[in-house]
Structures are given as structure tokens and as C-alpha cells.
Length: 257
Image (cartoon, rainbow, N blue to C red; front, side, top):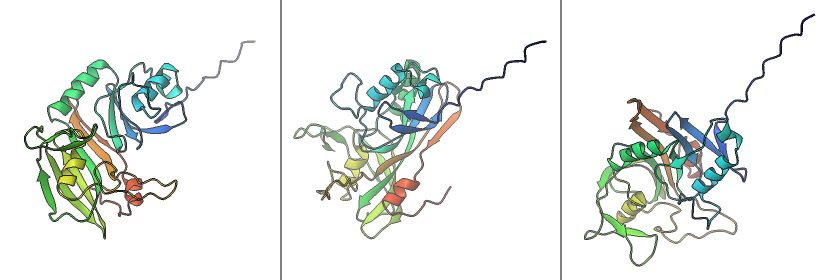
């Protein structure tokens, strides 16, 4: 009598999200051998992981999760993941992480050399006068307030953003913003300079009256990154869903294409 063959064991499928130590789940939008792109929730900062003053440090939380051997990372044999670019703390959407130092450096150069296509959805106060326009106001740190930027035609670095109206409401307008450069707070500064600050912008917009225990979200979401992969030489397109953002700010779904 022979023993019956052992039944095959099925490995658990890799989760399509990152799960941090506090239970936060962050959707993975795209992954390949070089990068992982996530749908960053608002409220998470991107600061060097050695700075531990806040428990909303996304890079530090991811490093800790990998070190702890959490399943989402272990199932990918991940030992390294570092953000290649940054989004403001309250900005949500596509955020790209490199799986090696080489990926961080190579794909980071695409941002620096303006070979990375970027698209954001933005909700602004009022209705801009033009259907499409480009702002090229140079940007520099504001010496009067740490962490704040301003238009500065003498000392500022060149900056360029293309804007297009998608939907106009009674008090707010939905725009598409395509930044060519990547200055800190660039979209927010260029819209402020045009007299139409981003809705929910506590740093650059009008004072926000908050009801008790309520939150006013920043109307800014990264919805697209596109680039030529420097390793495979193939085009890469990464998109974040827009439906929840549009519903929150009371805009209609966008037509595809």
C-alpha cells in the first residue's frame, strides 16, 4: 500500500495594497521590477525616514512595515522601497516608489529632466477667465514663513504649469493641471497667483471655517504619471481613480478618452 500523494499547497495571492502597522491600507496602482506606485491618501507626509516627529511619516511607516516582515512586503520579497518624488501632505493620488537605489536614481532623473508626464485634478475657488492657460511665474521660498513658497521674479526658480477647465460649478471649478517643472507647492502657488486658490488650502487659500470635528480636504489629486521606462524602454502609464474625489467635491464623472 502506497501513501497517497500530498495535496499541493496554494500560496496566498499577493495583496494589491500596502497594509501599515496601524491598519491603514493603501492601494497599489502599478508595480513592475523597478517600481511600485500607490494611491497616497491625504494626510501623510513624505519626509526623510530618520525624522520621527510625526506618526504620519509615510516613508518611515513603509520602512517599518517592510522590516516587520508584513505580508504585503514579504510576498514580494521586498527589502527596499523609497519614494522617487513627493506629494504635499494633503495631496492624494499617484506616488511612485523605487524598489532599488538604481530605480530611484534612474527614474528620479526623468522628473529632473522633465521626461515625466504628470496630470492632476484641482478644485479652485471661482471660475478662471480662460478655458486654457499656462503660468510660468518663478517660485522661491517665502522668507517670512518657513515652509511657505511665493512667486518671486528676482530670486525664484523657473516654473511652468498648464491648466485646463474641465467643469465649472456655481462657486468652484474643476481643472486639469499639468506641471512641467516640479517646484514645491507649484500648482497651488500658480493658482493663487491667478486669483483662484485651491479649495481647502489652509496655507495659501482664504481662511477655512471648520465645523467641530469636520475636515476640509485639499482639492488636489495626482491622477496620472507617464514615462518611458529607462530599463525596459517601454512606455509606462499609471492612473489613479478619480470617482471618489469628484463625488466629494460634487463634480460629475469625467468622460473617458
